[in-house]
Image 1 (tube, one colour):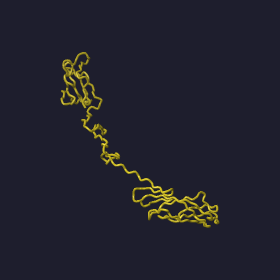
Image 2 (cartoon, helix red, strand yellow):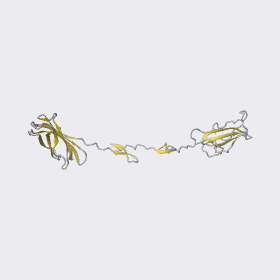
Image 3 (cartoon, one colour):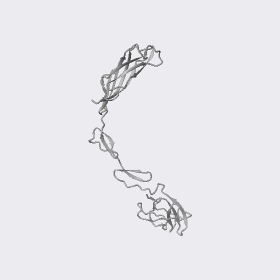
Image 4 (cartoon, one colour):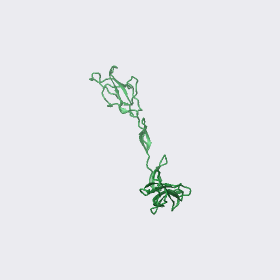
Length: 266
C-alpha cells in the first residue's frame, strides 16, 4: 500500500540550512542499502518518478513522491555533496494491500494475509414454522423440531411404563409380599407379576425387606432363589451364618420388591 512522502512540496535546504538546494536531488534506495528503489507520482503507482528525483532552483521537487515500504533517502546539493541521509518508513506495514471490496463478504485474515470471506447469514425463516436452525455440514438450514420424548404412563402407584418410541417400552413394577413362618432357617415365596414383562427377557428385581429383619433374634438374609423370568420370581430368606442353630423363621417376613425391564410397546 503506497503512502505519500511527507509534505508534497517542501523546500530542501543546504548543509547549513540557510539556502535552498538549487539543482539538488533526492535519491531513494532500499532501506539500509544503496540499491535504488522506485517512487511514483501517483497513489496507484502507475507513473514512476526519476531516481534520483531532481530539485528545482527553489529546492523543491516538481513531482509528487509516493512511496511503498521502507527507504533510505539521500539529499544531495547541486554539486552532488551529501546533505543528509535518512531512513523513511510508513510505520504501517506498507505493501500489505487490502483486497477490493465484494458484496456479501467480510475482511478477515489467515494470520499472514488479508482475505475476503463469505458472510454466513441465517436463512430467511419465512415459511418455516416450528423449525430450528441447524446445519448439513456446509450450510445453515431450518430443520423440523424433534418430537419430544413420550411421557411415562402411570397405572396407579405400582406400575409405570416409560415410552421409548421403539418396539419395546420400559416397565417398572412395585409390590409387597409376606413370606411364611416356616419354623426352619429358610423361608420363600413365589411372586407372579400382575403384568408380564417381554417374553424371553430377564427383569431386574430388587428385594426390600422390612427394617430390622430377624428370626428368633437372628439376622435374616433376603435373596432371589433363581433368575427372575418374564412372569415372576421367588423371594427367599435364610438365617445368616454364625447365628445360633436353633434360630428359625417363626414369624412371617414382610417385604417389598421392585422389578423393571422391557415390555412390548402398546
